[in-house]
Image (cartoon, rainbow, N blue to C red; front, side):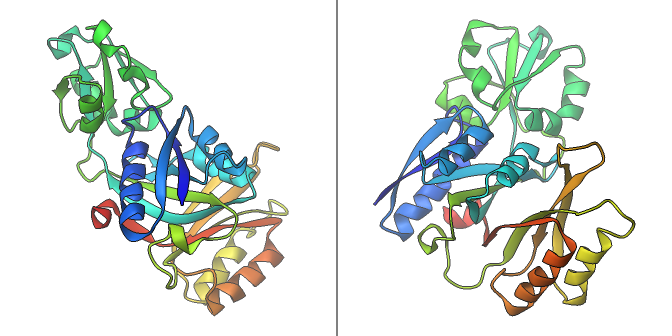
Length: 291
């Protein structure tokens, strides 16, 4: 069986790196062969799965320095058919890639906004006067970088090798403990072929909107999980985009949605929410376990 996996490109992005590790695991652990397909945005890669153009998408969801990737959360809320199959955790080390002879020759730095944020302190210290320009991905600006010796991009060492470009400065992220979590997303229900285990999932992700912005409205959903002893590992609000001050809430819970306790919690949660979406039950794996 051959499947198509969508990811944020061009080749050399951290998302592609996570996808490559996942493809290697699939080939070793199953009879599935996978082909990677590059898309210019995260949203487009998720829409490719929803539209049936790809079987899976690998998308970034959270960075340990910069927090959540809001495009991923917003798109998953909009696309009802998508389900999380697995989470991958990738260590991130940023490089300043440039054909400039020295740092003082650089006038412009490109990269994905999340990556720029992870290197903000370094940029302010070593390149305080350069123009910072966000791009659609960490590798978008690498194409043609060799034509301008005043331009640099922030990307991975793997990307520098792929595009045969020199690294001017290494490990420039502000904090050494830098990790990004990615979700492997499919259309429809969970498929054991895409997962690492048929046993209980370690996490469940969900999202919900509230019927009204009233005192204590969020406390009630939180109390449900607290009273049942279910640990909440992440919560985040996002605008509903309907009206200023209206929010959606995204939660990660350390439990399997199929467990009896979680089933009870979810049944009660529907009473206190307007719309409730179970985004998926899955396991979380560090990339090192897939090599």
